[in-house]
Length: 120
Image (cartoon, rainbow, N blue to C red):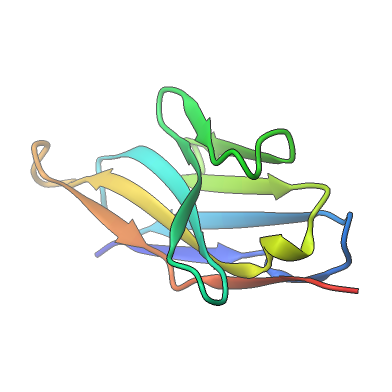
């Protein structure tokens, strides 16, 4: 059984920074890719950043957010700088994971979400 556990959300003033982390626990062979998504009030869930062999970012966060991974610790982080009120959302961790028992089996997992609020 695999679970993704997020941490690091909270309240920050505009221009401030936060670092989100997500750890994968349980039994698995490998994590093929990580992603961060967010859902703001009145909007649908949208991709923020993704990392596999390369990184991809939403245009709205390029130059401000950085996604990175630590394969030894099975974690992913999202460093968020120069935060804006429009960054306020629930942020979700996502991972594509290969089964420990069957190397051809992969599936996506989601964290429970962590609230990020940018407000003065």
